Amino acid sequence: MNQAGVVHRALSPFVYAYDQETVHIRLMTAKDDIEKVELIYGDPYEWEAEKEEDRDWNFDPEKEKSWKVQQKSMQYNGSDATYDYWFIAIRPERKRVRYGFEVHGETTAVLTERGWYDEAPLDHPGYYFSVPYVHATDVFDTPDWVKDTVWYQIFPERFANGDRANDPAGTKEWGSEAPAFQNFFGGDFQGVIDHVDHLQRLGVTGVYFCPVFEAPSNHKYDTLDYLKLDPAFGDEKTFRKMIDVLHENGIRVLLDAVFNHISEEHPAFQDVLEKGQDSKFVNWFTIDSFPVDPSIPNYEVFAFERNMPKLNTAHPDVKDYLLHVGRYWVEEFGIDGWRLDVASEVDHAFWRDFRKEVRAANGTCYIVGECWTDSQPWLLGDQFDAVMNYGLTESFLTCFATGETSVRDFSHAVIRNLNWHSQNVNEVMFNLIDSHDTPRALTRAKGNIERM
Image (cartoon, rainbow, N blue to C red; front, side):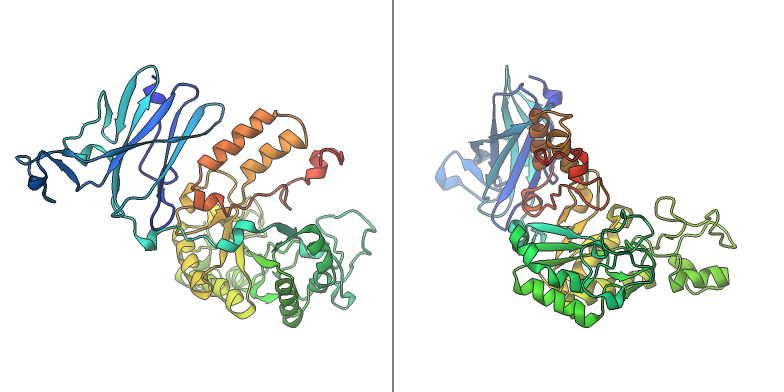
């Protein structure tokens, strides 16, 4: 048996409360090395007495014989190229449990939190992994409605032009030239209203909108005002009508929030450029030296974009402002959730408070972060419900769109992805084929409709 290939820690996604009654437990073992795994578990305070009349809730070594446990076989839960995965769901009677693993390969051994043993040590439960107590408030409460949602992404400026009266200067005729970083085609809220039937025919039950707030660009990821809709998309009346029409047709609304950075044209940053250290907004940003020089730049930015200064989300004023934004659009317009841009570069404390704010406004609000890598720190139930599952996206495209990898490779990626997240997260994960940040799937397929 390859004991070094057996992996478990008493942390999610290896162990977690799936609901108030159920605990999920997972184990990883080296691929093709283990034949069977038995879970050894029990209440840490329940003991076997030599005589029933001697049984006592308080352990007395003179009367008690051993810790009372039971065993159940774990389910083989698939493999990737390196590991086999094992799973079991148990329902501890008193919401607490100690557990270990009896692992069967060429030999049999028992894994506990203190290490390996030839036989299960039952003189005390202290050897074993622990779920001390399942508190209802600690259960990951993801929104039920997301589990069956089919998402469609709308880049508002490029979906449909329904109202020429709000077109920005220089708007191009639809389809007259290729989309480019600087051009505008006049897409707006009315265009979405006019084409709800298209979304219905596709079977869409949720729309994810790229940013809709005032910004100078066509993509709107350089926010000028988080509390004002971009006038090129329409006014609040039209926005509210669009949300109502979508809701009436069974379609939920997910808005994009860019809290990592703002536009260099934002009034707060302009004030810093003008007044330097004397600006009341100077601590909204992380500035290396003065005077502030956008040509270098000598301040923190998104990526290397000098026109997108990074916000200091730990600053109380910034935090209060953005938390108000998060709650405002939920309360005032009834949006159903937030997609959070560059979420992995914003501090965890901010996101914990953000979840509390938006969930106070709507207890079933969906929160999905833009995280491209292993995202477990954000998926513990106190921050996001899910992330954009780009890792699986790439595996899907390299198998089916480009043919670079095999179906077996794709299978391994799916199994690994499912086992690296709690089931609570898997049920609401934001699984996507492509987005505004990637080449389109049809492009990856080199225009091959059959592959698409």
